[in-house]
Length: 232
Ligand SMILES: [Zn+2]
Image 1 (cartoon, rainbow, N blue to C red):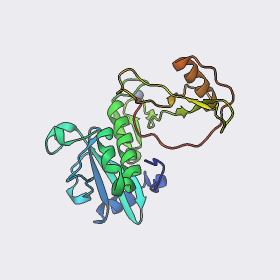
Image 2 (image 1 turned 30 degrees about the horizontal axis):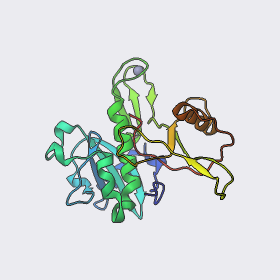
Image 3 (image 1 turned 90 degrees about the vertical axis):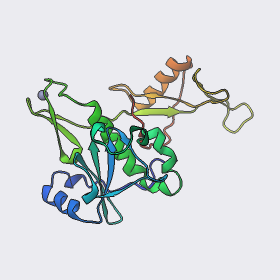
Image 4 (image 1 turned 135 degrees about the vertical axis):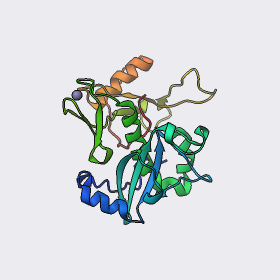
């Protein structure tokens, strides 16, 4: 799946515009993705987008606009979510629903679940332990005691193909790894998370050295894309 395809307009400048948010919420064409904790519930094999009138109370998150429609997510406590717990899926369980026709929804769903994961994991102010309130249409958490603002956490990561030998020659090889718990025959390129104050290129060299003990020389940058799965 091309994770960077078909991005929505995140309308970041509107997140604190309460009048605009109320008007978009009141529009019957606006659509809502219901998130229980960090999980969503497909209906009849497809993602279900509700009207705002059908959405329950919860943390209201503005995802943005696409093709003239405004998209929200509402994050509810799993104890308040409708239906059976088994009907709700985490991101890995939802990925099959985002293939084919569902691919257009993928960036909206990644945005919604990414924020829901952060809201779920960030319960108290990391500076003073005070309680937090959502602001900016779900994109900030403000401490009710010390006033410090928390912003969504992102985890930059690198994925790399390490090669040796002349490109295109018979000697060219690439290095793959596997985890012992994986099914037989499954291999992957290496990957890892960047550390604070580290360039992407240095993260590639460090991770390869740590994981397989190979020293990497030149590192060429290829491109970037969002990665929706949380670091956990
Ligand atoms: Zn605080």
